[in-house]
Structures are given as structure tokens and as C-alpha cells.
Length: 445
Image (cartoon, rainbow, N blue to C red; front, side, top):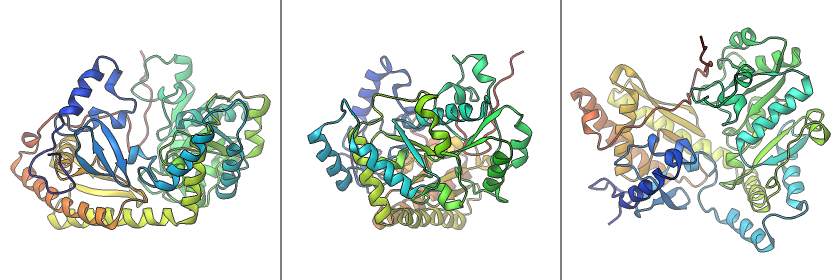
């Protein structure tokens, strides 16, 4: 019998997941389309590898096991799986068609919504992924300023201009790698020191988990304004989660361009580039940024419905309320148990559980907690990506599970048996970091 969201006696059976994985390994590099969803980020041997159904905040894997999900599709499920009003909007549009030979009215209607709600959103263009619009923003910035280089801080997708500064930069020409550099979050001097007179754009995630200190975002804004640099906010995570108008509204700092995806359409593939008209209008004749599926109507129907629900129902406040319960609750439990090597940090709408090396390898500690959370019906990878469907029952149960699992962790750490208790391969590192984004290219000698 499949496991449920209860204190199950055994770890979930994952036979079907493993069989699918075996079939995938010879056909799909890494076996996954999204690194954060792949087997390297879950305890291989305990965690399910394939999900087949979702409803609200719960998911079911290929073997029928049920879990509360705190990954939420790695961000897009802002309202929850199969949210009825969004799905109804998709179905209505499906009856009329998906992609057309001319423009569709939804392109205008969604743009008007964004113009109303997002600061500095004077013009709008659509694409399909966050990487698309981040790259388009960089291209517009170069066209607008007549300069070439980019300074970045955060994660901005898979395209050459960004991935050149990560450890997975094979296949990228050296000429491209020499045009992008990084700076550290909350360190205005690292930005100033990295800049020269050829910087076209500064692009950053306004927040990841750490709060901006000493008016950091305002300082970045002033620096860009004073040096003819286009400021781009990558709002993949903050948009329509931190507040309806994103980080620009929340912090009162306007970027020149902003990019959105994830939360904007509750799981449908659409991304948004918006900003000052004088920059965006270069996409009329000077900058080429067009795609066949940019006006695909199912995703735009979902975006319109999602944005209206977020606007009209206090969704961002709800995400903060439920997320605060989890974040504060975790920290209270950890403190009571004397786990000074683990804590939960970040904003309430999205927080992360961390472990430090004083108690052992953080990935081993994380793997043990993940293993035990999964046994008890919680699909967990260290994040609380909150959705409008995470109920009080979900949160209360999760804290109840944390109480037991962290007690088990404490016992295992004290006995030095954490790694021995793992039932499979531990979670593996990735090139992404959650803080100190100073990922410099390797110097070739």
C-alpha cells in the first residue's frame, strides 16, 4: 500500500520511479530537464523520482505515494497544483485554440494588468522561460547604452552570457566569458570595484534569502543611475510572491528593466520582460527578440487568471503568514533541541533550512533530514516555497514532523551515525549558491 501524509512505518516504495529512471538514463542526459528536480538533489534510494499528480499542496508519485510538497515545481505553483480557477481559464481558452496565426487579445490584456501592478512597467514582452527574458534584458541594455559588459549577482538561467561565470561553462567561447563578471550581494564596494566604463547592465536577484543591508538596493540603483548602466531586477522568485508588484514595490526601488516567470502563471510556461519604454522600444526595430510561442494563449490565460487571483485575494500576505509559521516554528524547535548547527532563514514567502559544518557535512545532514521527511509524507529539499494552498493542517503537520525528525538528527549527530543511517546516496552539490554569489570564471594559464 502506498505511503500517505502520515507517520508511515516504512520508507515509500519507489519501484515505478526507479524503473522510469532506468529507462531515462540512456536517453536523457542527467535524466532531468531541471537540475533542481533531478535525482542528484534527492536521496537516491529513498526519494521518489517521478510525480504524476498534484492537487493543492499535495503530490502523488509514480508509485502512488502522497506527499505535502514544499518545492512547488521549483517555484511556479504560487496558488497550488490544479488550482480550479486557473485550470478553468486554461480549459476555456483551449476550446478556442492555443497558438494562432495572428496576435491574440490576451497579449494586450495581460500587459495591461502588468502595467497596472508592476512599478516601472511601461512596456511588456513575453517569452517562455526566465533565461529567455534575462538574456533579452541584457541585449536591450547593451543596445541602449552602447556598452558590452555585464555584472551579475544571483542565478539567471542557462544562456552563455551568464553560465560563463559558473563551473558549468564548457562550450562557451572565451570571448563571451570575458564580458560577464560578478559581485557580492550586500557589498556595494564589490560592485564598484568590479565596474569599468564598459558596463552595460547590472542584473541581480533583489533578494535570495538574505535581506539587503544598509540600503544596498538603493545604493545599486544610485550607482547605475550615475554611470549610465541599466539596472535589471531578476524577479523570478520575488515577483508576485514578495508582493503583488514584486521587489520593486516591496523595497521602493525601481529597476530599469525587470523579468518575471515562475509564480506569474501557476505552472504554465510564460515569462515577462518589462520596464522603461525608452529601453523596451528598442525591441521595435533595433533589437531582435521574437519567438513563435511568445503569444501562446493557454499560458497567457493562466497568467491573467493567476495575477487577478493574487491581486484580489491577499495571496502574498497569505504566503508570508504561512511561511512565517514554518520558518519561526523550525527555528523554535531547533533552538529547543540545542541544534545550533541548523536554522531556517529567508523571507517568509520562501525560506531555506541550512546546516553548518560544526556537526558534519551539511549535505549529509540535509540528506538525513530529507530522508526522514519523505518517510513521513513530506517532499522536502530544504526549502519552504509557499503556495496559496498550504493550509494550517499542512503547516501544523510539518512542524510536528520537524519535531521528531530533528530529534532523530540530534541523536544521530551525537552518536556520529548520520551517514550510516542514510538509506541511499546523499544529495549532491550543484554550482548554484544561496549566498556569496562571487562565482568567478576559472583563470586559464
